[in-house]
Image 1 (cartoon, helix red, strand yellow):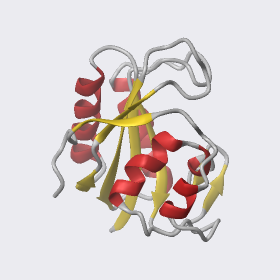
Image 2: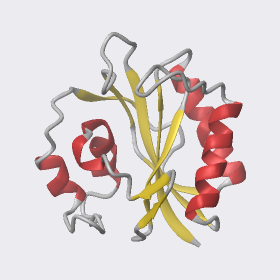
Image 3: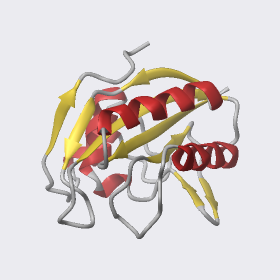
Length: 167
């Protein structure tokens, strides 16, 4: 079994219901949720003029390989109404693999750790809550260090308690 940190988020429809549905599908198909961050709200990153996002990080224990996990996440996104109309556009749900144990994966369509972790406060805030001392296997810096040097200035604030309570 491997540990994977998954970012879930969206800005269309009942945002919290989509987070809950995503967490349910992850539990049913991909692995046990060991811990979950609070839900955070932030302005859309990369494309202004759209609704704010809700984001949450889930730490799961999975037997799936990184590629199998990616395919399962993409299938769940589609099931939850995800329509890819363009980069950084609005979406019902988005699910990304942030970390998969301390593995480094670089194949077409999948990079782990996620390459934009250091530049996205909406990723680092929930990660800071769950694993401040987790060391990025490529950058050799902790989440706390990445958070302190993050160039993203979009405000991120706690929206509510986690969809699924911490295990």
